[in-house]
Image (cartoon, rainbow, N blue to C red; front, side, top):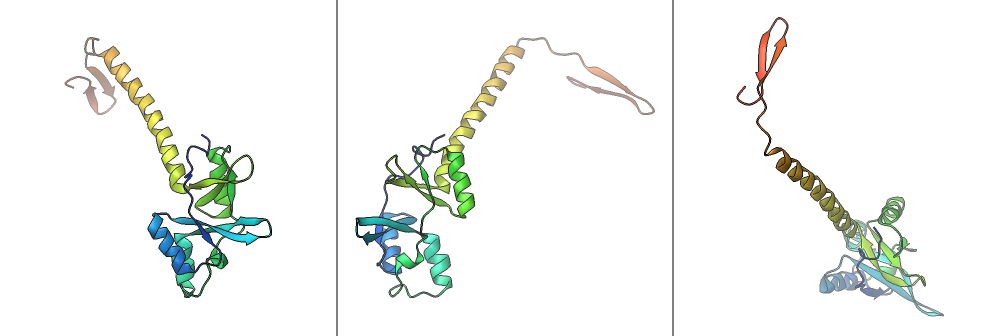
Length: 173
């Protein structure tokens, strides 16, 4: 399973000089949990990092950073962990584990930002795979049930257990 169909292509960006409060407001406005942080360079605007809702809540609040006075660029993970859209989901999981993050930037063949893949995106992808596996099992059980439905019932079986007596199982037993 490739990363490309799993990733979110709608990416919301914020300038590195924006405040933490502006970042939180932008996340709320666009209903996203991560923003791509950009910065101006001599070559133009470039990706600086990634800031997540968790960064704002757990890191910024825990450190008592001023939401209006602190800059999002200082909080952003830089350089951000990333994978190619052609990578397998297992590669994305390995990168997340190694980096200790739940979201990765996704790049295209030209190393440009193509999207973001999250832990939740990967879970949805694998859930679909597991549902397909479950349907294979269900189809097999249905086939077996239809094949055995016309067979005559089995006779009861008696089992001799030394020093206990006879136990039976089977239909009615």
